[in-house]
Length: 511
Ligand code: ADP
Ligand code: ADP
Ligand code: MG
Image (cartoon, rainbow, N blue to C red):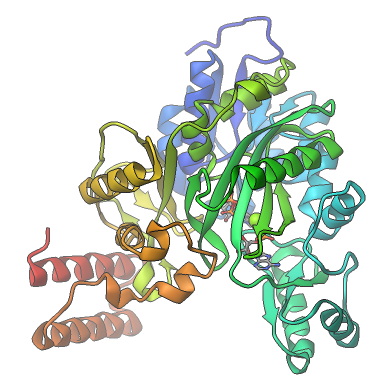
């Protein structure tokens, strides 16, 4: 499809990502009359984002480090196709300051913030210092990296145990360790530094107060890069496993109007303090006593942005693109309000009964739920092989209701209609969550999964014979895997997943 020339700053955008977020961005760009370019690795030749874009450019081997993370290859693809802008999505290069600088130096538009904003906010220590000096309250703790356990113990005694050792360059829930007493400090510090060094190439660790039973509340913001910023209210993301979100909602069931106003104002203050440009998220931790503290800012489109779109009736991809086109912020604060309630369920190819271990395999069949208030941001299709190389998120299901009760009831209906056969996935986990008293009454905290989740709660109850058959077959698969009879780990895993579901279905008569 030829891209129409419109006299805008750019007419064609390269999407430097894959999966559901690449698909969602391509949809937004198309609605704005912009041309779309996808990039893909070896294993993604037939991925959904490739099929959907106007053009697609091959950028190398499957490991992300050799394709989606190589700035030079992305830029070459943009040059080859004449794309005038790059949208990075989330993950990959989205928070990489040098990449955004490289894009702009090549004369292209980076649809996101400046490299300086990313560098301040990408480093948790730098962002703590910046926020403190701008008058935003951060979690009590240090603003300097700590390497000496004695110093760390001194700080911990000052703020009180438990404390959290946190990697300054950490992300995706990685690089954190709780320390409850001084005797554990030396080894915890050594381990966290080692992990951070190898995972993030930066072993700077700091100490902050570990808040027990908190809620994760974050605020969506938009900035114009000139010091003007607005907020699009909050999302609550306290349902987490391994410090990573699985269910998000907006509004948060825990904010009073006064608290909402304060937390949203703090987010706007954060964005304005760095002349933030584009869409971003300011994350806070809300303590049981109602105090809230700045955690970090994610300088990109967030995974859970659809819940905000559903309750505010906005389109954040459109808004980001308009800011990048130089048109400023397309919403006015006074026009924005939260209407109804939205819940998002992240559909991961992972096995909740095996500590949420990632799974892979072909999507054999899928029934997509529909009806009022339902949105599915999908990254796969029937017949697609879910690769091992990337984040195992397959789709996000977003459900809107007039109020929280209706949103929950509708979610139960929709999750019941949704079927997906192939890799092991976490749909049953979401169904389980929707039945928990702490979720239903909104009192859940970030400890929800750890405290409440027991795989036995959602696996069908088996009688003794069935349980024996299950154990025997699991052992058989393990033996096959170890003897190497299945040549590829991938096939074994996929088969094991299918087998387990089929076995359970035939045992219990559940479809
Ligand atoms: P969100 O707050 O938007 O939900 P997540 O923490 O779930 O963000 O991360 C979004 C995506 O970015 C995921 O694909 C995650 O794996 C990836 N990600 C985030 N931070 C990092 C990091 N420091 N290193 C590698 N991947 C990361
Ligand atoms: P990441 O960059 O990995 O997203 P965050 O600082 O945003 O790191 O923290 C991720 C999650 O870890 C939070 O949502 C929360 O559940 C938990 N967490 C982080 N800091 C604290 C803290 N000081 N006290 C309690 N929990 C915390
Ligand atoms: Mg975070």
